[in-house]
Image 1: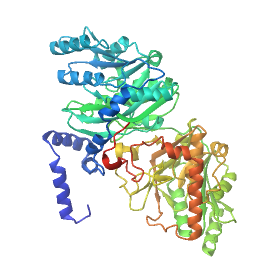
Image 2: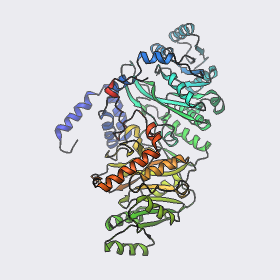
Image 3: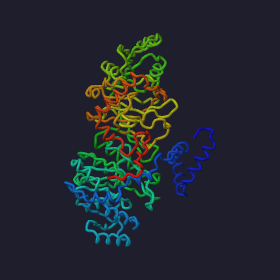
Image 4: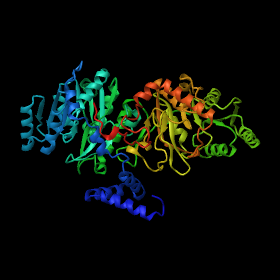
Length: 619
């Protein structure tokens, strides 16, 4: 909505008001109290922004039809593991209880057992339903507990009933898609060493009439898990891991599953993600799924779960809440005082370079760094006069006299760098966050991390870069481009520390040891994709590439950059595209593991990927 556009504003409010129920108004007032007016307005706008592809019709086209389900029932697997679905039940409305159990009876994979620990044996209606189903199907078993022990101990009682090779967690009022266990066993056929499996999920209204808010997840993402329990539902784990890691712990009630997931993935040989929507999380007024502010104790327990995980893994980090409850920040401290080499390629553009270096000098709180400018065929006298000033101020000026090649220029600069960490920086970038180097060093010092990137903003405070997705727009593209910087995006991903396949080298820190190990930038990629290729080599070598939104810089790059319109530029760009396709073909075919196959590769905002004619059925 543009300023002064009163008609547009009225239409916007009319659209929002039509969606408001009395309960939604109450919920909104709670959010207003928690966030304050400014943050509340941002989240209100995000909540009611229309979907580019509405989920309801998309989901109807997505779900397998009866013919596909019947085909799944006939599949012969080489291994047919028994899967124990454990359910802690307590005062479950019988309609919900029946629907939950029926969702198991509809499974196209049949080797399962349902283990229900009933914490409310005095509930006669529940008792009748449990007896009815147990008599109807021997795979359904229940145990009446002497008293309600709380969700953690009730779940542990259900664990004790389990006899399967794998154990799956199901809440007493939620549902599994009919193909849920089938898809899990398909994944285990491909990865028999997997100890943990999780799937995508969505939410469903209490009356089951509307599916909404799909959570389309990445493959295992350590830093995202430390930011939020994104794994959540549907979660399955090998029973031997449960025995090793231990069951639920009552001191984490409210986030008992978060704590449990951490302990399971810490012990797992392999964690597998099934990118299918197989779990339906029922929401109602008492549910944290729809009213997060109602259970602050749960978010405190989540914070403690992360802290316990960091302690077990011997990782130093300070955990804090973010404005979005249930989402956390881990701040990693700097160990020692390592040197950072800041590498800035430059050709003329004296004013731009001066603004960049001034911002570093004036705003950077970390002191142990060097600045190296790699000069590339400048012609303007004022540029060289400025270089003389910089050299007097301790800046190292290197001369790269060959033609422009971003990869080769940075490799040349890195060879002359004294720092333990390399910070690749464009000359048209200026610092916003004073602690930017401490933050990046703290992340990069972790043994599993090879590189880290940042959130870059245009001068108008919209996002230029919040991580990269392989395949987006063809080879790779930035996420959340042009979104207002104060917005957090899909499930707050623009504002969460997380692992990604790639980040932009307009501002990227890397361990020098890792940079040398992977051979630096590929010099065949003179202009495009060299940073993406470098990050993929870092991933291939077994290191994480981290997107850190807590470091922000302005990137002066124009939103209307000139097109690659000369014959030489077009030919060079096509050559670089072909290089990426030939070297990373499997990744481009299989999809970015830190994204999701059901998300768009033409939109930057986690929109749904269109299904052909919206009537495709999965098989």
